Structures are given as C-alpha cells and as structure tokens.
Length: 323
Image 1 (spheres, rainbow, N blue to C red):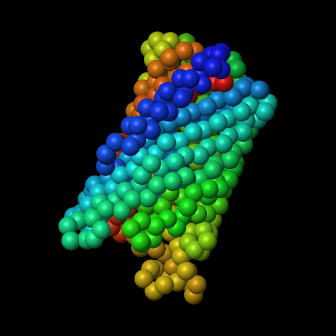
Image 2: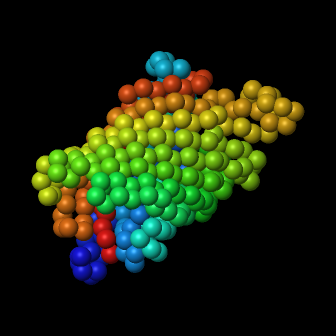
Image 3: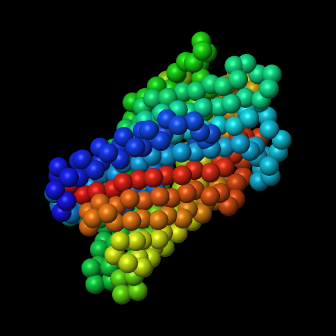
C-alpha cells in the first residue's frame, strides 16, 4: 500500500493541475444538471477497513441542436460548455458493505448565444450535490472471479439552484444543482477472466428525482453500461464501454406553456432524451495502489423530445488511489 504522505502529495499535485486546466478557456456542453458522471468510480465493495479516493476533472462541450434523432439549425444558444472537478470517497465497513460520499464543483457552466441576443454569454458555477450511498455485496465467487453488488443512496443539493448572473436568474441548464433531494439506486455485475487478462462488467444507475423548492421536478434518469477491459501489461488497462441513458421529461406547476398532465402540473418543453455513448478509456498504474485514467464520451445515437442542445463530446481525467 502507498504511504499516506506520498499519496496525499500526489493527489494535491494533480488537484492543482486539474484546477488549472479547468480554468482555461473552453467550450463544452451544459444541458444536464447536477453532477456529471465521472468515469469508472468504485463499483464493487471495498475490503474491510480500506479507503478509496477518486479525484476527477471533466470537460464537456455542445454546439449542435437536435430534434428527434436529427440535427437541426441552431436556436438562440450557439454553444455550451462546462468544467467540473469532482471527488469520491469510499470506505469498507465490512468486506460486504461499503459507504460512498461524492461531491463536486462546477468551475463554470456557460452558454454562448447567437448574434442579436444580449447578454452574449451567461455562466454559473459552484458546488453540486452531495451523493451518499451504501453498497452491499449480494454474491461473490472467488474461484470464478465474479461478483454482484447493489447500492442505494440519496443526493443532497448542497449547491444553489437559483444562482444569478448579470442581474438575471440563470436558466436551469446553468445552475450547479437541481435543488432537489433524489433517490439513487445502482447495480453492478462483474466477471473476470484473469488467465486471458480481461474482465467484463455491467452496471445500472437509477435516479428518482424529487421536487425542488420551486416545485419543479427534473426527469428521472436511468443509465445502463456494459464494460470490457483488457490488461496487456501490469501497468496498462484498456476499457471499452457502451452506455445508454434514458432521461424522462421534466414537470412543473401548470403555466400554460407546457403539455398539461392534470389540473396542477405540466410537462416542460423542451425536455427528455434517449442517448447511447461509446466510451473508450485508458488507465495507467502509477503504483499498485494509484491509477490515472483518461476517457471520452462519444455519442453514437441521440434522440431528443422537442428541439434541444445536444451532447457533442466530454472528456474525463481521473486519479484513483487506496488510502
């Protein structure tokens, strides 16, 4: 195990680098509220008494509108971008029970607008959500190198959902958090083939959104991912991930500009999407307990209800260690 002082120094150095890169001028996507997904977080359970920490920086960009599954001419938003730094801590209470805490900070969530719209650019920033989760190992077979783990938790809005910029309240897409308490459930299936130097994973994540103080409810989110990893050497690992995301439509109190559900609430236009991503990842083992990873989210298929600013690309750099 890496000595604590050496690990801490390495994490601090990388944190400074990530913050510096994150503040450089960039263009990225800012349509999804709350915490972005930060790569391969700890999915199985930890050993009893062991700590894991993951620090990640994520950059996203969008510059294309979609209607259904087809690109359409730009609307009033020309492009969007975000820079986000996140951290995840996990601790093994027992060999079958692990607790997690995850949070992050948006260095910026920015939208640039087409000519003639003032102001030309708006930006939000700040703390996101605090995600607290407990993971339970349901089944494990050491001989077959297989495991099934399930988790449940809550997302607590520690950031602001009503941030202002240039005297105006920012749109929902630019707020650092949704402002709601959400329920999160995850499922993780793993099967290793160590003699062939590869592993397979399957994971799902369900987020049931609550009402925020404005009585606004973001669409529930379901994501499912399949992973294939291959380690050609002790230091290098290549991961291929195929991820699907299904986001429901937002709802709010009846205003007359949405699709009525009943006498009290309506579906918000434009919201709701279906997406499929290919996510290649490269991981390098700096030491037996310290890993550096780079991954990219590449959209293969996107379907949006109504006309929406679509995902173009996202890059994540992460550092994971045992303490």
